[in-house]
Image (tube, rainbow over all chains, first blue to last red; front, side):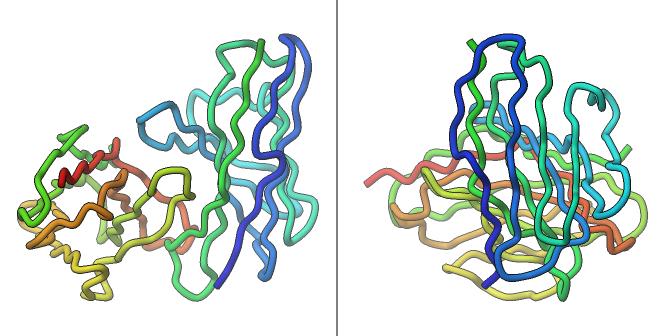
Length: 116
Length: 110
């Protein structure tokens, strides 16, 4: 089946630094990928839709300058948290849609970001 | 506004008892409804979708358009069913974008 990977699985950084998280579709192409944020024992909050070859579409309330998204190829999307602060600490998850069954998504394992 | 609501944060049952995880939606048009499951330390994965009308791991869910509900049911819960369950809705625009409910933790006690 289709697999989505994320790297790194966890990262700890100092306040004020930037962190890049990669999301890859391993055995299929994804012109669209989604980035979510998940708080402990809470729902997934859609942050943005990553579009290959064009700008990402951000959900209301998500700072596009804070969370930079780049979808440079059909198998890779990156999320960069710029000038990270402790309140950015969270679990970030990406997903890619099943090209044959629309609205079904394959999820990555997530990245745990801790900002000190 | 498009919204998916799961009223229960936690549902705790004993093994062998029936389970019903509630999901209500508010969505324009004719959405597709899904249940996703997240077992401990694993990634989110699709459990079932309403268009398939299938039973996965003994779970079923019926779309009730009149009540705008998509409750997940299983007649006899097993300990391995303990997980976080998310109801999600997607539109017909083929964007793949999903709206998730808040999630319900199912705890099946021995």
